[in-house]
Image (cartoon, rainbow, N blue to C red; front, top):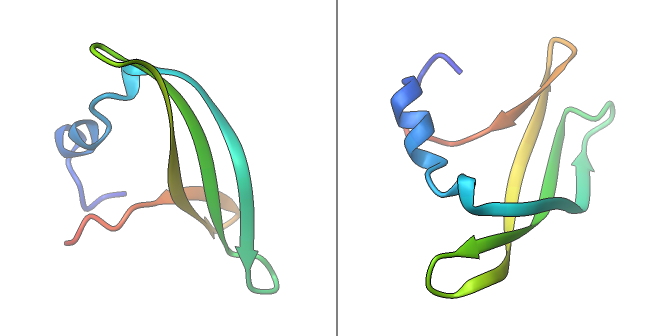
Length: 76
């Protein structure tokens, strides 16, 4: 969380304001105890020229010191 500026983070989420709906499609977790999960999201978004479209987004969530965090490889 401390490796990326707020502006860089916001830039990667550009377009999220077009989301109309997001729902969890699937969760798959590894390890015992569980410390990492792959979450597939189904996204319905409003595109200016195309109208409503459905797409999918894959996220990795990790458990650290009792809290879940979205893991994003920012290539640093």
